Length: 181
Image (tube, rainbow, N blue to C red; front, side, top):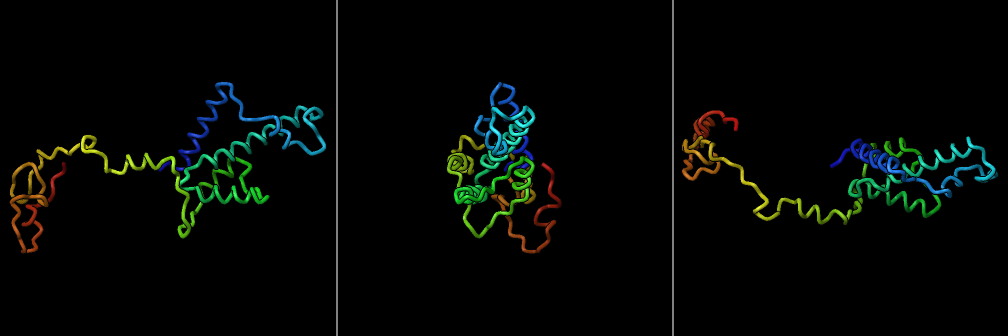
């Protein structure tokens, strides 16, 4: 899995690409929400507009960061925040540092079921080791010498000439120490 730090770096790279390509992360209505209630965008000073814009972007990025987090690991956390928001209690972090800290220190409740990220089910199926034999590469063991019969091409635990040595002597059973491959 991806660490929280790796996810943060990937997320920041995506934000940088959007900005570099001239994209915007902000709608005017988002700025309006961060202005004092007595001030409109038309009557706000440049400083007030910049402060509102900065808060709006920070909040948007924090929310996006949370919503884009690994569903299998943080799905319950995000679902709980969404449900709280629908009930009028906004628990989404307003700053990236708070969002990162929340993910970094999140302790899932192992007694409750986690939300399955169905978008990754096919990928998990393809990577579960049950793929077709063409995709599996057999390890070349032709240079391996069996400690049991001293023939090449197999390990002692798979020896076709296996002797039942019940003496308990490990050196007798395996012919000494294992060689490095």
